Amino acid sequence: METKRNQAVPTLKLSHIVLFGLAYMTPMIVFGIYGLLAETTHGLVSTAYIVALAAMLFTAYSYGKMTKAFPIAGSAYTYTRKSINPYVGFMIGWAVLLDYLFLPMVIWLIGAVYLHTAFPNIPLWTFVLAFIFITTIINIIGLKAAASVNTLMMIFQLLVVGIFISLSIIYLIKGSSPFALFSFNPFLNEHLTFSFVAAGASIACYSFLGFD
Image 1 (cartoon, rainbow, N blue to C red):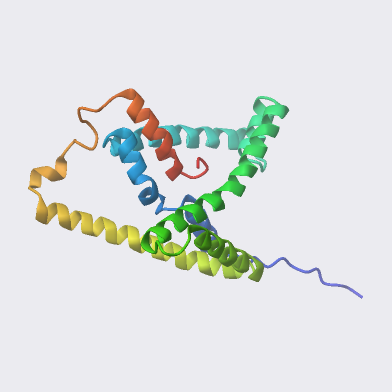
Image 2 (cartoon, rainbow, N blue to C red):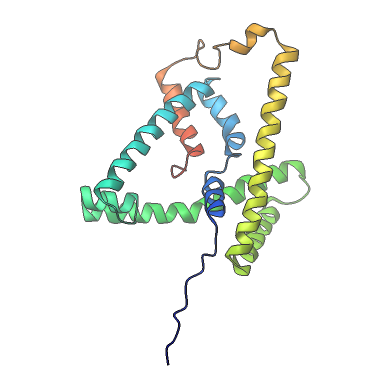
């Protein structure tokens, strides 16, 4: 008697995977670090992001080269282990693992701080525990439920970013002269120094995938 093999049915669609990648980048994180970044750079936020973007582009180019050289799973762990040293690769692997461990903690903490600011009578730890409980329940239910919740959260984030950009454009058009739209102050001002920009770029890297 012939037995049919159980064919693996994909749990997630390509759109779900793309949204998971975008969620990991957390598009709204730019709002969470803007104040710290503006203070660190003395208003040179745009310049800091340009420097951080340059570093990310070189990193992405390097990853493309390493993928061709070592077409196996493992990312930074594999590249370091194969090209430098297995012991260094071991340390990089643990760093990546800790990243996945600490990233949810940071997101919970940032969200709790925002909610505590809006509702100061509720203790901060209450929001942290609530986030942990909700996240745990979603993951226990299953991957499909997590994908659905992730899709809704990404739609919400993109809507918030879109509304913010639209309101910013309206404010600039109605509240400023046309020349203000082409101001170089966010890129160049009297506080422009390498130390300020470099410090800001290290914080701005938090907005890019894999460098939180």
